[in-house]
Amino acid sequence: MKALKFLLPGAVGPFSGFRWEVGTWHDTSGDPTCGHGVHACEPGDLPFWLQDELWVVELRGDVARGRHKVVGAGGRILGRVEAWDDAARREFASACVARVRELAARRPDAAAHLGDLEQVGPQASAAAIASLAARAAEAVDGTKGYDAERAAQAAWLGERLGLEGLLAR
Amino acid sequence: MSAELTCAELVELVTDYLEGTLPPDEVERFEIHLVYCSPCTTHLEQMRETIRTAGALREEDLDPALADDLLTAFRGWRGDA
Image (cartoon, rainbow over all chains, first blue to last red; front, side, top):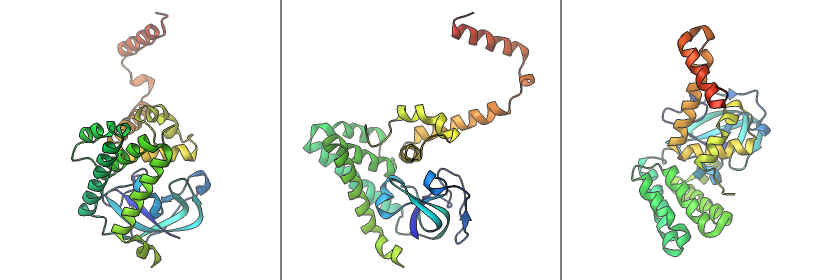
């Protein structure tokens, strides 16, 4: 199956430190149902794993679904999603900041997250700001609010990055 | 329970994460927190480095005076010095 994977600059896995090479299969002996293997995600999972580089990956062998990821016994990266660039990261972060402000204006429960925004500062990563927006929504509507905010972020990314067409190819 | 781990919760789970004993769902929550929290990422790296460094030490590498100081400190900490 085709999926997506966020990597650090230079196609390096953020948790494994593994440096990926385009087109080269990497197979593991781990059991995907136990979370061992090649980790990737589907469009709805993207806001949880934001890093500098986004890649289309192909998974093979057994593939298990986690709460916010998919794990395959093996995988390879196929090509970078060039649309996830500095401009897209900035736009996404701005949209998340706007959501925190909107939530805080509507409900005092979310206002504390405005202070968190100030604390992380303008150089904060898109991932940090997206998490703040989701937690502000959680302060307003509990788990339902959190999940809805993450789903809205995923929809924003899917549309902006044209992911539907990309994975269908 | 909040959808995301707090920094304090992550610190409690670091050892289990490094030893590979966390259940898959908890590993996922742990790593999602790392994605957006650079202080916790730094903490995890420091723990890894500490384990690497301490694991390479042998008893004979320790200066005897330092070993005595450490033993005294540990006994004092346990309240039996």
